Length: 527
Image: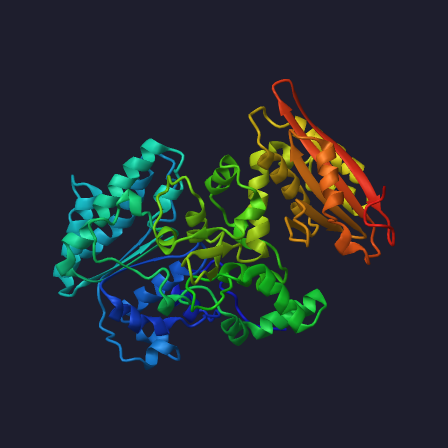
């Protein structure tokens, strides 16, 4: 069995090295970062290694060369002079409180002020930061290094509270403005976050801030390539394969499907989520760990409110400008979904220069769908609810489409009243199917069109065509006339063709449906 020590949740470089945990060496990036410029910004999804990267830089700037023995940085031509490091981590605070940001800034500034003898009496957090930089510079005689982790958390956590959001925005703008005004005292500054909010103007004064978020030279600076995964964790994957009672390659494929796929620059590597991989190897079980660590629900609400059909999230397009700079209140949620890691780059069209996006892997796709469904069906999380996934899954697996449709019809009547659109009903049906743990495809091309939904449950195939305030006959005619079942003519499984018409008016909400069965070796659509 492997004796690897997995640093799950560990973000301090010195602890990982000194205590013998596995460290995926990213120290070769130190030299190019120093040559890049004085003020650098990088966005990456949460739980992707940003904090560990900053901790690694902190150890370097403190001159702790002994920690780097055997790592790439040790063989580079670097200046190991110790410098004062001001490290600010905005993670640990409840920013929904009115004074949450002020309290966090005080917690961060106070111990540093004691170290460098800076006076904090009767001044604002911004003034305290300015005094601290000056004090550290004067006391040590060396330019200061500033590392800022998750700068945007005080905004992401309160996007629904406009007044508090704007207050925190102003405070952060004033605080970070010191990076420009105190330039003479600063050697290097690195700022990380999930997103870059251009329209809130936090960094508008810092016109020399170099954003490397989509720079191909730094595409792999956080996250792990498959080559790194195999170099550092082969024995751990072997242990996982043994636990799963399958061969190495099959286990590697499962890890790839679940955790790989992130791409931050066109010439970069497809990357694994470090947090999820470490959890999977340590627990010897492949599960959606990234979502268990917390996720902003406002993105799901925006998708729901815009009436977007969940399968259409794969294939969304954006310009580079949209991807690298967003406003938190932008009506289009897609760029922020990219920056927060829910979508990633699939390709770029050479003619339009538009970036096509998709879910990076199964963990993110399924997790986001799970986040979406309660936005439509609040009761779905109730253990006593007849609308839980397991009930729908059983209906599918046991070949009972009538029970599935009756359950769906009852659930739709229970939805809170509002002016629903076709996209609402289609989304609910798709999410129920996909989250039942059963393979499902939405709008897959056939030679004569695209059925709304195909579900593959054990020994049964289900093909759906949805209509909204039209007619059931129209749905059934489309299933027949476009021969959606034709591709399964040689399949030995029974095929259920389900036409559904969602009815919505001021007096009535309902679902009418019809089911036709194509038995094996029968004509594609019985008369």
